[in-house]
Image (cartoon, rainbow, N blue to C red; front, side):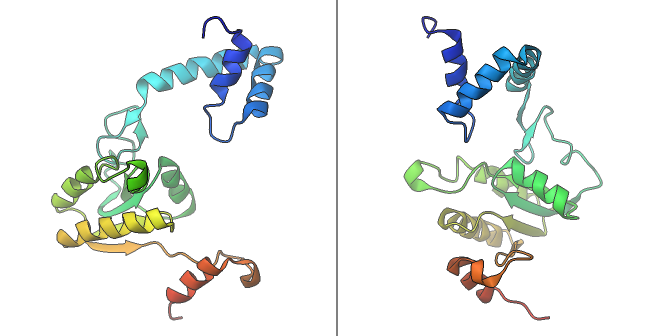
Length: 198
């Protein structure tokens, strides 16, 4: 790798980012080298520090610099509500869009036996231990409505039922402001199956 030009190494390194193909990576590399070297240096410093210091919260498995993230350490949060999500980005979305005041558990993905992702890779043993503590009264499943997401939800619901914890799942269906004729058939079928009274 040391034999290849640094510009090429930088371009290839930038391709590790999601959604960044060869052309985008090349544009980013050239931009940093030609127009924003100080920004590139700052990016490198912050990235190196983040790679060293950021780890998983010991309680909820989100990303944190501390042993417990700010939400888990906050005594104002309701420990009887536990929202199970796939990625830390979902936590940010829920916090920004809702008034949810409970705690979280981050899986880091979905069950996918074909990809070698089982209960151990998702930290489900830690989730079981958390439910065994007896503080959680409601487990809210906020996982994707994909085949893998549904399998994950079913698995977690069974674990939760063994502990006597009420399990709910966020609603799925027609988006607010959506036109029915533009909604795909799977989403529309799910919305009809989960309809509620007014």
